[in-house]
Amino acid sequence: MIFESLPHLRYAQADEFSHSKNGSCHCKTVPFYIFAQAFEGHYELDADGEFAVCEEGGAFFVPPNIPLKIWHYVNPESGIMRIRFVHFIPEDPRGLDPFSQYRLRLAVSRADCREPATIIKRLLKSGPERSGFLLASDFLRLLALFQSFMKPKKAAPYPEGLSVLLQWIQEHAAEPIHTSDLEKIFPLSRSKMFSLFHDATGMSPGSCILRERIRFAARLMLCNPNLSVKEAADQCGWQTACHFSRMFRQVMGEPPGRYVREAAVGAGPEGGKIKPSGGQSANTGKHRRISRMRFRA
Image (cartoon, rainbow, N blue to C red; front, side, top):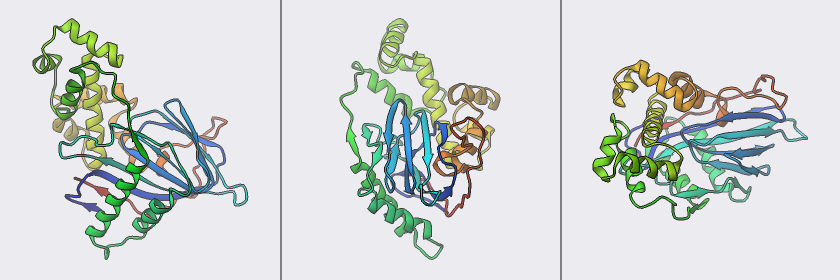
């Protein structure tokens, strides 16, 4: 179900599934937030080096664009793990992520999951007879609950001017930006500009620009799954689809079509392939797609 003009959300998906592969592990990086509750069994998680154990009935909550390792553990009595989840990309009126300045609570307790779980179950049962207004209200309430699981980050260690430049890059990520454009926003010599970026981010200005442009393209294709690679390249200011695909693979590790396909259509929050701890491929078990909802702001 697709809804136009839903405030504060560029993309949202709700789903549930179950499987019986105890100790299976999956590694991935995705362009959306994940809130995933194991209401039977439990998760263990490594989010870019930060480890968390989620109790049964609890959830993990992670931001986009960080490397994840997710372990699945079944309920020892039933031998099953059952999961409900939401993927989402929020945006403010400028098209930026309003949650980017917050630190997320990786493991959410069973008690704190009660209201989000009730809303997600209602979303999964929703049908054509339920109004778009009620669906939008549910997602807006979820966003408010999710924000209660966050804390403001400490002041960014970026020097004066760099935050302005990074925000400008995000706002113009659909355009063919060059380093010379940054010099017009914050006048510095090329060498000083390179030092400013490298000292604070570990990347050159060109690498930062490429990363943000590719991330923008990944979100665009995720929100518009019928968009071809050529159409995405055109809309994101790339001269050729071939060059776009090559740069996408350089940043995201795989071609755009495969990346979006696995991120959006995989087995719940894990997407793509799930592997057991022994390293062999495994069937994810019984998977039932209940509902998939995309929203555009």
